[in-house]
Amino acid sequence: MAAGIAIGLHGGCGTLDPGLLSEAEWEESRAHMAKALRAGWQVLKAGGSALDAVQASVVVMEDSPHFNAGHGAALTENAQHELDASIMDGASLAAGAVCTVRRIRNPVLAARAVLDSGQAVLLSGPAADDFAQSRGLAMVDPAYFTTQRRVDALRSLQARAATGAFVPASEAEKHGTVGAVARDMQGHLAAATSTGGFNNKPSGRVGDSPIIGAGTYAKDGVCAVSCTGQGEIFIRRVAAYDLAARISYAHQTLAAAADALVFDTLASHSIGAGLIALGASGEPVAPYNTLGMYRGWISTDGQLTVATHRALHAMGPA
Ligand code: ASP
Image (cartoon, rainbow, N blue to C red; front, side):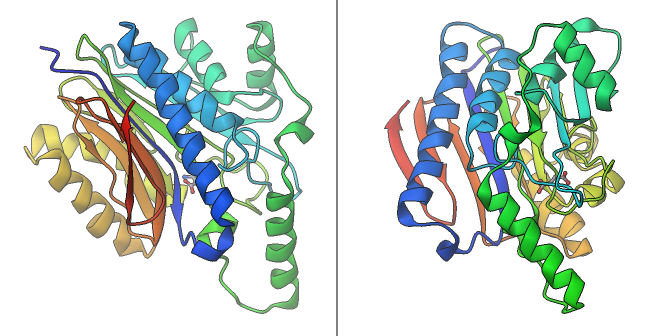
């Protein structure tokens, strides 16, 4: 059944104006994606599960300041962090998620702990923080998540709102998310997603990332997918599950299903949207309808590729 191991990830889509970061910063963001992919790949190569692999990759992305998850997460309208994450096992359809958490260093680990507990799929707010603490996960002061980039973005968004000047926020100011998908030696699939949501979001707002079927979905023999873009639309479109349903019921190929979802269904709401997905045999797709999307994969041939804009950076063997 198993043709090979594979892993893919995204770090959010958006305008990604090339002038947004220095060349050294773009380079570093690509290096962090490569590191995250290799972390998952090591798990898969050692015979570990797709579930452990996506978790390992997302932890590295959460620890990087370049992405809107964990350290570097977006701020709410009250300049607080409220983080969402989820993880799903395509073999059993077991899933775990947390939302609006504030003190868990790596929210994806809390999502995994919820999955492992088998008692719930989604825990929220302070109770989810307490649950993670009781499971022995690393807890931090919320200031750990804050970076100057997010503070500046929040200030500029709020200053523009106060003057009434309608200047739409760039996707980079607003959005971003990280996610990973993997296929292991047994042919099992898994997906995980983690996010700070978007800058200046209302306090208490929950996006698609922790909603199974909206921002994250995995089912063996079908696909594993993690989404990025304005979560409200992904929830209303049940986007991640829609991808799986197109493949299962409409017998679309992964590539056709992903393109239809991103370029027709989601784009019809005039939102930036993107996703990373693997098909049943580990083939990656990473469509996005914005100027760029942080993304990368190690395909079944062991070659590592990362990209931020159209150009792909082939990094050679993993
Ligand atoms: N989907 C995320 C959310 O709405 C944000 C993003 O991916 O840009 O919370």
